[in-house]
Image (cartoon, rainbow, N blue to C red; front, top):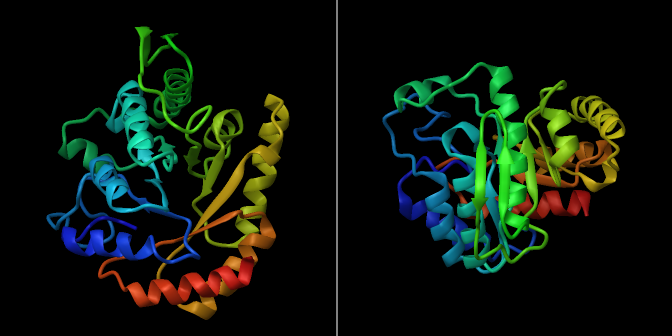
Length: 272
C-alpha cells in the first residue's frame, strides 16, 4: 500500500494485516511524495525507514517495497539496508527492485535521472552488487555504473542465500531479461490474465536464452482499487490461471481494515 497518509493509520493497518491469516505479506511503495493524488505536497513517508519500523511492530508478515527505485540509492547501501532489515525482522524481507521511472521526483530532489537504457544497465549491475554483498564474505565488482573494492556486508541476512529478489516492470527487452537472469519473483504491472500470459511467454524465452528454469521465478500481480470481494476474487482467479503465484491488494488511504479482511478472504477462497 502507498504510505501517503498520516502515520497512525499506516501503523494501524499493518498491525491489523499481521493478524489476517489470508495475508502473507505487506508492501510499501518507493516514492518521496504522493503520486496517486492531485496533492504532491501531501504526506508521504520514506519507504525503507518506514519498513524498518513496521518490521518491529509486526511478527508474521513478509515485507518489502514494491519496488525500490534503483536510482534513489547506491545498491551497496541498499544491500546493507536489506541485510539490516532482514535481521531485525527475523528473516521476513523481500527485496523489490526496479529501474525507477518518476522523472519529476528525481528533478525535485536533485537526483540524476539517466536515459532508460542506462537505467536498465545500472539495474542489471545493481542486482549483481546486491547479490554479491549479501552472499559473499568479501565483494569486488568492476562495473560501468558501480564499483566495489574489498567490500564487507556484515552481518549477513538471516535468509539464505539471501532474501528473495523481486524485479518489477514489464519491459520486454530489458526488464524481463533482467528478471530471467536474477529474480526470484517477477512483479507484473498489468491487470489481465491475457496480458500476463503474453509477458510470461517472453519471460520464459529469456529464461531459455540464459539457461534458467522459469519455474524458479514466482509471479506476483497487483489488484488495484476499487477492491470489492466479488470482482477481486474473479480477477485473482483469472490471473492465477494465467500463471500468477501471489496477488497483492493495492489498498489506498483511507485504509479500511474490515474491507481488507473481507477482500483478502474472498481472494484466498478463489485461488487457494
